[in-house]
Amino acid sequence: MTAITQGSGVRDSQPNNQTSSSSSSSQVTTATSTALKNAVTGIQDQARNPLGGNNDALMALIQQLIDQLGKGCRPKPPTPVDKPLELSKQQDAAIRERFNIGGSLTYEVLDSKKDGKLSAGDTLVISGGITGGEISRQKLTAKDVKAINSGGTTSTAQQQLNTNLKKWDSLGISDYSLTFQRSCFCTPESTRPINIQVRDGSVTEARYADTGELIPDDRQYNKQSVYNLNGDGLFNLVQQGINSGAAQVDATYDKQFGLPTSIYIDQIGQAVDDEVSYTISNFQPEPVFTTLAVGEEDGGGITPGPIKPPVEPPIATTKALGEEDGGIKPMPIKPPVEPPIATTLAIGEEDGGFTNELPIYLGPPIKAD
Image 1 (cartoon, helix red, strand yellow):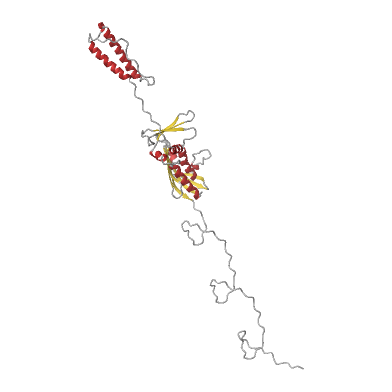
Image 2 (tube, helix red, strand yellow):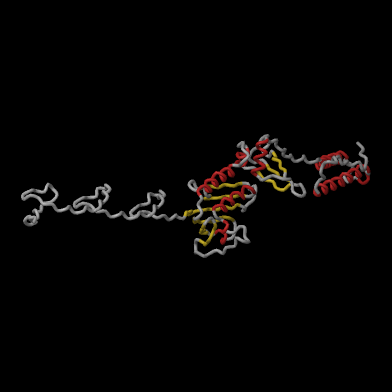
């Protein structure tokens, strides 16, 4: 019979850097060790051997206990850790700008896809702040990866915003109206459509579109006031989403005016119910009134020329009888002609065009004394 020294047991071969077993595993190990000790004691004390001297069967039982005990002491394999990716300078600059990583903040992109390159599904971990620890962790989307790998330092959303803001500013529209509506997981009051009126670039009136009720002007103490939502305020909504490092910022713009017509912002990609969207409709620039000539029609947006000062009425001129004004300037009026001096003409002498009167008889000639 093979002798087994009492108390030899199984030594803890777990290395120092391995975590300890769970409480349930410890209880199983303790129970197994107790059973093993009892079996060893039974072999050494034949008088108290419960199997009546069947030592072979007892040894088989002990061997099974040893096998089970060994399985319970085996350390669990460590969980694989995602390795950080090595990024190019262009990728680094694009990530910092897209997710607003600056100052004392640091980041790393973990290769969660384990393909050795930047891919959708990889994990962006941002650290820093007062403690220097992890601040946020999020999965990169296919859109994120496309923007980061585009080669530029400015995201697509920022490029679109810059282009359309420049178009809007170039038009110089200061008087207009529009309808604004928010969509989010919030109170019904916050999602009611609102008619906004803008004069000289500032919101002068805001009313609920469904009832016409006037909304109080609270812009002095409320940064989120609807009275801040003029054209520039709508562009600011998009810019705020980009600057905050939102997981997704999508905006569409009016082709003619450049003004945003829809905005969608998803702040945290893995979070639920944090998405918000805005719809801008019924944009209407106020018309500019101009004075048109009588009977002149507006040719569809053609700006009439400047109005000329009134013309002085023409100076009346004397025209010969039957003379018609053919657009030719009349000749200047000549001064009156003195009447011709009467002369004596022979009887029957005709006036060659000066007069047709008979000669005047002056009486017989006077004789001299």
